[in-house]
Image (tube, rainbow, N blue to C red; front, side, top):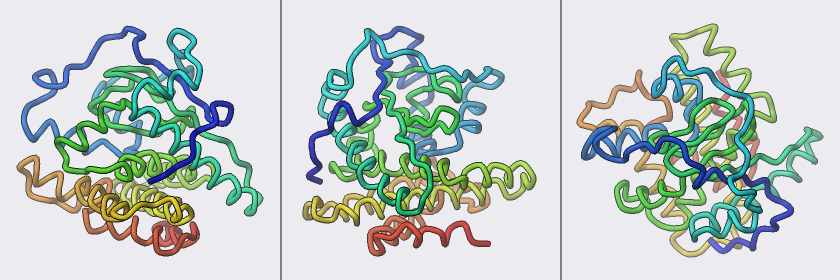
Length: 288
């Protein structure tokens, strides 16, 4: 995907890399083999941070304050640490430019999300951030959290290759920001608390809508897509479907335990957004 160079004055970037903290092991401390791969991916693409933090670190209080950027790094410096950071900032910039006019036309207040880089461990408004969680969006501080090492794992371990697959990660998390700004995420979380038995099913709806929003962004920038980009995105959606991940972890797929949707559902949601280029097409996931 050929995106414009980010404007450092138009993106909200924080950097927690190199700021100490307890590193989280990527092997023996978490698990081994394909189970590690599956667990890392299982928490990717916007799982509810409350569930995620609770599962990894029960009892730890959340904090509403974000740690300052390490070393006072500027957006330009943070975004050019490596190629993955650069790509992420370009994607964030494109997402801002794409979605702001949509909100303006709908007369809904718009606020740009932050993008926080961290390495192995960090702090978010939803509690501790850990690499094993994968990229996630925290609605409490309206920021996307990313350890760019995950992109290497996507490519080498999950088989989700290509730049557009990586852009899809950012675009999906941005989809959760859209849900926050429109009030959808608050409504869903309220329904989850009122109906715990439906919590997983409601989570799937949110995740599929975020996938659809990612497709809408791609469609609105179709002149920037390269041959093979659509296939790269659909492959990534397939690789992180709940049923595929459960199989990789040696488990039988159990639809009742799905929180993000099956591979087929995720591919369909992304494709729906790509084909429609209209965010209203993604409303279908919130209908009873």
